[in-house]
Length: 112
Length: 113
Image (cartoon, rainbow over all chains, first blue to last red; front, side):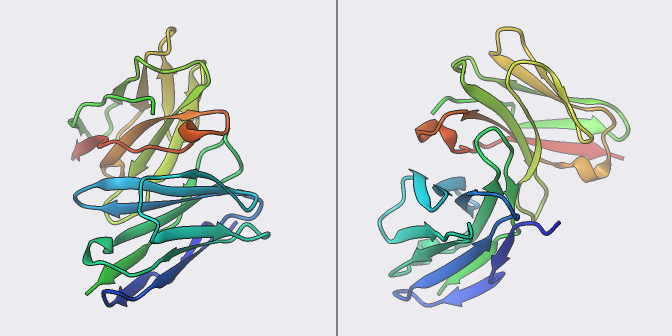
């Protein structure tokens, strides 16, 4: 079966712009989480959605937002990009709390 | 968030078993123990998880101490492909702040040919 699909794979944006990243979970998975990975901070949790509701949120500024659609697909948006937002953004999906997560390959965002 | 403690790094020889330890002395009764690994230039990969009993799957075994304050991930025969960062994570089984996966620094496993 298809894995977690993230688009685009690579993205270059300019400071001050906004960006939208997309994630298609494994079919049947209703839980989607987003993570930011940087060399300095490692993997940091952004948010978790379940059945279109945000269930958890990490310690990121309000410039980072997300949503989940009725088909479980999810998007995350970062507004007013800063150089420090350059990172690998990972999406993961799961059936629910009692199951493991499957991660996508990520979107590599570079802010210049 | 309930915390886990892992050594920074471990080394193993190819085709030998590897035991990766994890301490989680503040674990609650509703926390699952999850293990993930991340190979270079890839996203994390689910390895195994358990609640109380030892668990086995095609990738590894998870041995959970009787008091649940520690666990060990066992790779039965290490291969070069198993060289990765291994993360031990506690995840609550109920909806709430602790139901997210909180990654620490993990153990960097090196496998010698």
